[in-house]
Amino acid sequence: MTDTGETAASQQGISQQGTYKTRHLHRIFSGIQPTGNLTLGNYLGAIRNWVTLQHEFECIYCVVDQHALTVGPEPSALREATRQVAAALIACGIDPQKNVLFNQSQNPDHTELAWYFNCVARMGWLNRMTQFKEKAGKNRENASTGLFVYPNLMAADILAYRATHVPVGEDQKQHLELARDIAIKFNNDWKVEDFFPVVEPQILGEATRVMSLRDGTAKMSKSDPSDMSRINLTDDADTIAKKIKKAKTDPENLPTEKAGFEGRPEAQNLVTIYAALTGTTVDQALADIGGSQFGAFKQKLADAAVAHLSPITTEMNRLLEDRAEIDRLLVKGGERARALSAPVLKDVRETLGLVTG
Image (cartoon, rainbow, N blue to C red; front, side, top):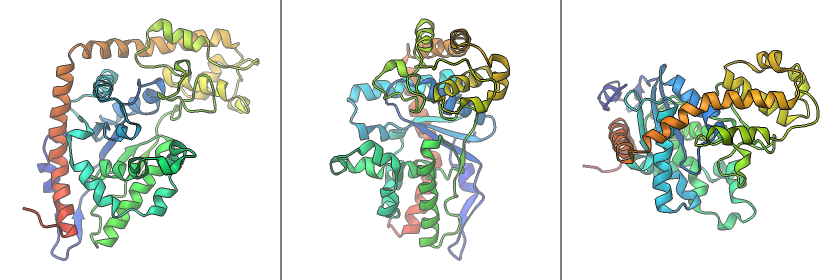
């Protein structure tokens, strides 16, 4: 892992013709908002894959606290949530020494680049973002401009480090496509070939989209009003077992093959979670538990969830006993992050014709 920007900077430069030439590193960037408790969905759909990716890529993992401002969190709650997310990532297996782990506001290069991207992205692109439509609801005129241009900041998060790959869930693919469009338009508008890489998505694992325990058609969300709809990484063993026991099901036994999930979203969700927790495919899981009644299956699922998550919860609680140490790790990560983004922002300013010192 590069501790400073020197290695990256040594592999990039601007030719005499003005065409940007770079050998883009295989670099991962991914971020997660500190809004509410992290859930089993966050873990299976993202964090677990991040742990694997850190052995294959140069990785930058960010707690995107500035994105969280779009929902107007109480300041002390935001600070605490940022520490909790950082502790959870480390407890899940993210190594803050091997990777760059920091919170977004430690590096102002993100917001500077986001402004430049505000001048690149088109209104039509942002108007098509389905997440804005969903979050703004019927009162779009009263939504904050921050919520509207959120995808431009997301693009800046990624491209400030010239990341080449981003692990995303299905619901973030549209935002990543916009980041690709911004990179391409920037490169074309300023005639700087390959200045920014065209980022590739990585969608990994059986459980890329974990659904609510109360509604198999809705994503498991840390913002859902019902705590029974999700398993939090902070839940103890009894709470996990209780939530799984009360999870919505249907009257039929589990199917013996995938085709039997037709019209049974809750059954499909629970089996998918079971497969992910036990390290098998859904087909393999059905070979084991297909035909079972839900009562017996839920006990097996609860046992698997407790065995997998309890060590994470224990380690997370241990880390949170020393919040000053978490803050120190985030500050150090921010310094490493800015060392990587600083030469990129310098090149951006020069390309745009800004007069700098």
